[in-house]
Image (cartoon, rainbow over all chains, first blue to last red):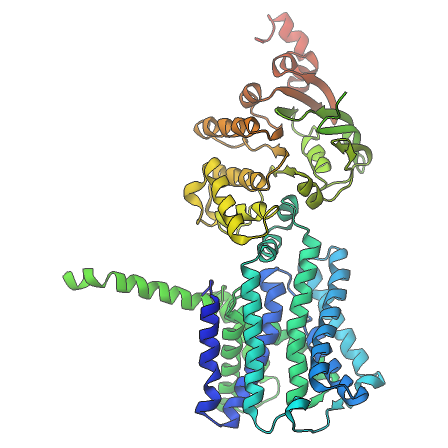
Length: 329
Length: 252
């Protein structure tokens, strides 16, 4: 699974793409849309955290910026929804670049970097909850306008395909990074920054580029959120919940792998839904489930579910290879 | 007089109350192997870190082909062809041997395929050809030293700063590593090496600088340097040279 090729990616995406043709159930589609949105957030985190080794606790800063820019440009400035969405991605990238420049220039690594990103996200959340342009405590409602050119749809299927396409693009981007010089440099910085520098890697620039790409991907999920739910407030956009989802999906699925965040998001969300059905929707219950899941994964599958699947496949191949011997014996 | 490849001019480095490098000057011409020797704590690695841009000197300047490179960051020095290895090996532990070396090869090659090809070639020149797919973390101490060398080599350096690449190797490993280093020099890479294994220094180096308590106390051909009373005293203690001379002199 570690070496998911473009063909693998297309196969996975194609398999998911036919779901709306098989079911019209809003429950199923809604579940998958949210899971894919989390997969996109997680893929953003994965570029910086999984490949670059820079663990952010504040990816809400980028998700929220994507969501707010998309919403504000439409409702206050009459910008077309699709253009607003694109600018939301650019805005997220800009915030990522700015926070990255500050953090990496100060030489922040490890838990210090994590804390600073968390702090930035929290500052943005508090600012967004008081300034008028974000609707302060009330939030922003995007006017209902069920037309494709307004990035709004009657049914959930188009939303599903759009988020799936965004996830597909993010998967391909990450795969291309894996096969590029930039990717090799990024891994080198993750593994040993000093050794990377000694071999001619401009570590600060590589990290900054990773953070900008990471933020852009996560901001795309934020912009999508705004269009799908037509509502944004500070707790949703910049709240810690999304920062947690962002790192949980790749860690559970397989950190530093192409498909890890997607697998992780589906696994985490499925478990969350099962718990809700079994025990009811008590507030905070999802966090209990997530916490337990994180402990289990870190303890028993530190490389994530993707590595378990790869291990399983390797065992199966060995078992098949030894099949003739077994029949002979 | 032609400008030397590397010139260290009156460099000092102070860590609080400790003067680790004290007004050290030396020059290295293009080609050949230069050894930097001296007792533990003499400031050799500190000097390497200053030359390779990992530490800023408190005073003094470094020149590469006449250009002032003092305080230039390590990655820019690497792009100029000045590459160091680390005394404490620093492998990219989570990557394979092949991927490790490819990071070095990427310095002058954008394409992943070309970098991997080059990495495979370099691996075979340092004897890692059969271990390409092994995780770097699984290598032995000697293997890691080779990996350290291979990665630096893959950048295509003009000046290679080797910090104790022979330390900790057993005699059979030494006898294979020494010719590897000599072959590099013969292919035109200028090498400056910090080394404690005197047998290797004597057989490899064309010139030797002796660093004692941060100062360059002796310079010259290996045979003349090891007979220098100041060098003997630095290693064996004050008055050792006189006592050795009285006892019939060291065999040099």
